[in-house]
Image (tube, rainbow over all chains, first blue to last red; front, side):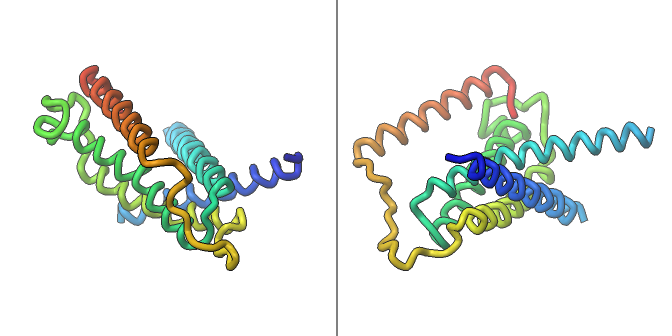
Length: 33
Length: 157
């Protein structure tokens, strides 16, 4: 596994984490309303 | 006062991001190692992720952190209780995470479309019935023992 693969995997994982964080906060706000 | 509130909010957001980063890492590893592709992968993983991440946690919360625990859980009213409304909200929040994280992970790692030459879907990962039995039995026993110890010691999630 090359450095390029590891960096790509990390970037994709961070992207998923950011989207999931936004989804988590958005759905929590929707529930509060 | 306002600065302290802003700092606390920032800490909460950071903590939530760490939780999501761990979830995202697990999803990424499962998706990249999965033999499944397309809708079977997305539906199966979303079902499993929602079940483990949300449903099981909220069942534990109901039996351990509400007065219902007196009848269904440890047999006594917990010292620390969680509002039912908060527990119900987690079903909604967990669904939001599963419905965004799983399809996105499948898309980013190139597993969102089915392989036309992939053949039939394999439900069995290649282990025999007896192995299924003892592996599932071991998981049930270990999980049950951990739950009992937590309930008896009075500590929980």
